[in-house]
Length: 458
Ligand code: OOG
Ligand code: NI
Image 1: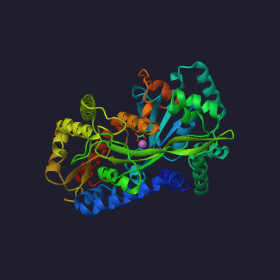
Image 2 (image 1 turned 45 degrees about the vertical axis):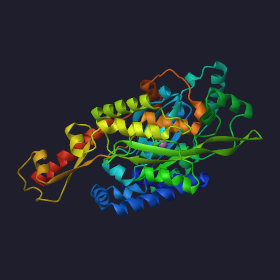
Image 3 (image 1 turned 180 degrees about the horizontal axis):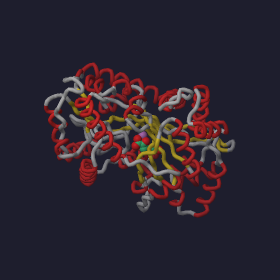
Image 4 (image 1 turned 90 degrees about the horizontal axis):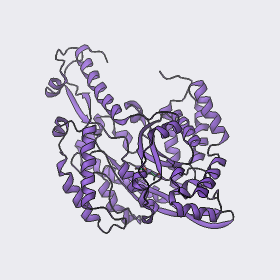
């Protein structure tokens, strides 16, 4: 039940997402250009593809496409992370999934804060990929201690933001006025600060240890480092970017282009160099970029295992070079290897590779149907199924995105050290298992449809 005294968390999230987008457009103008390209390409795809448009309308997804985006931040301490969990909870966002990036040479582990459940996702699917720096992986003990001291001394939240989080927790929500104030205060945490928190000298030491460490430690807050609109044709946007003066990353991450898209495909444009003041000494920092994504079907553990296996095989044949010199060879290897992943919905379902949502077709009168077998009802056109969209992230792709905007010299060896328990202790909560969540959406949609047809009750 929603309390009429309070702004709906979905609504607060929508306002926040819009405010963040407006702020990022002024901070990183190329993001505004990218939004325009995406919007034009999406309109073109919908105009040319009535079937896709109808499917999106039928599954109530058309309205969310243009609003859709994710962002990413990198935090420095467990305290920052646990407060971030409470901040996102005010907007109906929960931590889903655990991603270990050490394996890919990036000293962080991460989760994604996002809305959970059909209704909330439809209202606004805004999500934030949130990483926690792993200072324990810095080898130089002195540098590690210095970085820790700098991080411990900073406060990334405004005092009023912290008060409003407390208030929301105590009262079970925020009034409309408080919600507006909360959005404005929370936005401050994600803003770019041209004044560094460290000297030019320390910045250089941190940067030499790892560019990402410098990005997290040197600033007053965890500036939003990218925002990502969702496109219906990622290859087209990738091709168009140079025409608008934007240099895209060499290859699109994730699965190849398919008739029936799966999981997530992503590409980004290179980070820009921004002016920074280090204690009066002018310098620059390169971290913030733009990204686009195309989302497809969520895969079951079996489907995901096949995806992971085929991606590994592809990368054994051809590892994409950061400078794009073997981009064509990589894309060909990807396409060829993924021929082993069925590209038709019936086969995907028969082999148990993907999740599907059930809905009513409108045929038959609710409560008058005696057949109770969903498969029979599907065959007789009372029910339809549509792929459930993947709402999460992919660690290999995320590593590719990190690398492309950190510079190609940034790949480093760390011993792979996933530590979900430690992450959850720092977060102050367990993360939701994404597979359980998709399975539940599938099961509940099927049960609900059969109940409506056979009993008339929703
Ligand atoms: C996050 C990179 C991960 C994605 O879309 O996979 C990510 C970062 O660079 O902080 O956003
Ligand atoms: Ni991203």
